Image (tube, rainbow over all chains, first blue to last red; front, side, top):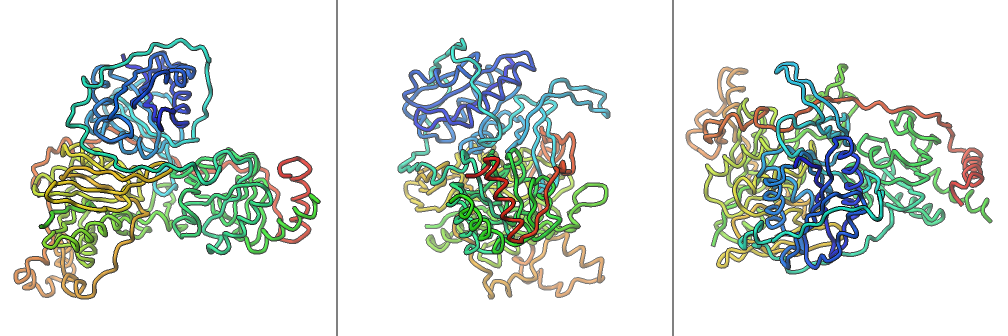
Length: 339
Length: 297
């Protein structure tokens, strides 16, 4: 009872990276709280799925295996979590800030009237003193996220309601196997006890999942553009440089909103989180929401004609200039010096 | 065959265009400096609703929003584009609501509207980016949901089924669900049609009670006051907690399980950085340095 739970998302029978990252974080939180880490998987054909999950330090895995549970639809998965949580009373529940997590989390939190914080960039344990009420709450989950267009960072807490729920985007937390032979319990549940037949009302009639068109997440070098790049045509310069450096191209939300670049290349709190060894920021001002997705880059180059762009304060190299001027020169001198 | 559609829309500060005066000296957000706009993805949702209205004659599209008196602007904007009417939920008791208290308030208002086939809204609002209100409203109403919709492909009124193309991680999916249902629409869906000039003429004087009251104070009379008796559609309905028979304890701050513990301003830890010009020499030096330490190459 009162353990840390992670909902593990599946594509087919493979547990999503974001869930494994959350198991790693969940293990640390459970250690701090001196409780156990439990995980939930729901899908079909899940024999042996525990091999993917237990090594992250999971003390108990709850398996829900039934034909109607993959592909994901809202009601069956919600019913599983709602009913299981009524029995298990977790203190914390984490899930990926994915399409599935953002469909499922709110529904579950609404049914349990618990709070839910979306897209957290950091999770910590701490106390909270409510001076007005004269109560001190111990060991709360601090759900930390940028807010209000990234101008502020807010720490959100749920003093009274359980579970404390949070979603986190893929790549924000680090994935780390604790022990390949970690001994955890596995419990296979009778799905019909948790899900009513009437929950299977939505039918998925067609489904296409493509491998990502790019490997932005794993790329050692990222060339990213912001609104300051100015146009879709200028973005081609970024692709040219990326081709030379064997890099991937990313974009800030402003550039994506302006139509300069595809949405699937967006870096930041509401996009991808990247940790390249080199990040070349072109015409990116550096709102905190963007910084949240790239601040762990090894070396940062900022190309900007605004000397006061916030991103310059975290850059290793600040180049005062425009993208049109600087990128062709970088390509030229890279070619010259690598011949 | 007609449908009854409720569009959930929110007036939001335009956080995409935050200027230098967006923060006050004490570090709090200066909301007054940010223009209030129709939440972009709610416009995508409105378009999907209006397309259904085009395809299913007799369909009504009703907007529902929550906010201060000036949020009646959202309803006017919807009327200009083809919606049939709207409700503004407005009450001090709604203030400070997190997503749960917001969805409670919206759900009680929808229960008062009572008759609906489709509730549709944007996937998320740009001032919070949580994407929670849609699914939470669905849960409170006890209906199912399809989120991240790209396009409503079909509504079969006989079978009471809706077919929706939706975005999923790494792909697309076509899902079919029952009516009534909650749909949330992605920003990548079709953009909303522009205002219709005739509808702008028709509705430009549509006002909520608080807006009328504000005019009254400023000028001592409402221009064209008799219009509002002659043309009832110019009165934008405002609902309080009492009007929707809401439980005050579940609204606003008191109905919100999440609390903001602290808010910090962003202060970047300045690094030692090298500042370069865009001259050939500076760029070449940098490239040579990065090659030498194997950052690139």
